[in-house]
Length: 182
Picture (tube, helix red, strand yellow):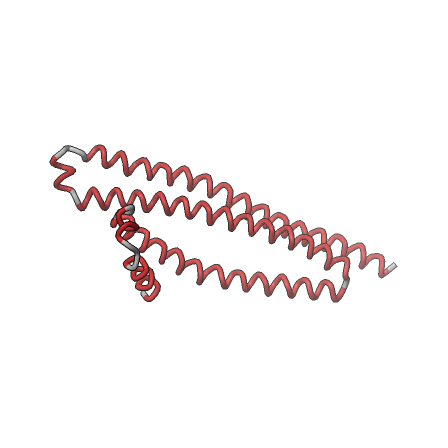
């Protein structure tokens, strides 16, 4: 609530020229969607990052303490995994911004049409308003498929590099164990 209030106050402090270039319906839609996206991102992602960092650092410390070569293999794998995760995060953020823009525009079209419903009906503009709304909705759908593909492939590459680094670490460690018994 405090976040929405602060954002609302910021919107109200903008000048008349700024407000004349934007639709009130779009601003209301964006106010709701931005604060929800911010709130969900802070809670979920922060705890996941902490968990992964704790597991990765513990794994690296234990492996380097026991055998430096295995630790180096795991560290290289974690670097590749980190790069894949960062690439996925950037792709997801970019897609979210584009989708949010289109949702805001579509919400603005719907809000404007509903607020001036008598005028739309009087001039028989229902079909035109539906087509305007549908353009933005189709754009969001296509962008969602594209972003899902990019994010899914990035996360898949991150998981693959993580699992490969662990597998190579076990492979190298098995040779070191056999060599130490010989």
